[in-house]
Length: 111
Image: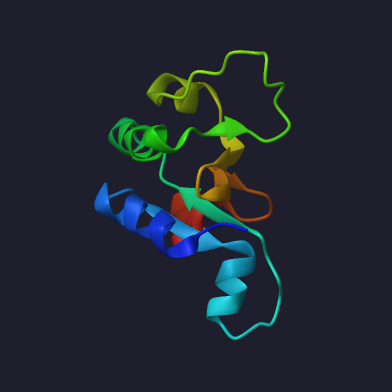
């Protein structure tokens, strides 16, 4: 299960622009839904990608299910070349979604 408070402090501390979605968002609205990861929709500007990469890098993000023996580089360029990432980190699982199915991008999710 993700350690929510330190993860949010880390993202807020780097001024990452994001919206909490999924199970934790449901919990914040009173749902009893059990969730084990943090789902966020993030803004995809170059500056925000740089902040996300810097915020998570010290916590060893890797794609969930990615073979351990394959190298994976976590940086701004990786974020530029993808949109949605399902990651495992030292804090737990986090899903970074640049596009949310049925809703759209960060700006659409905010609306």
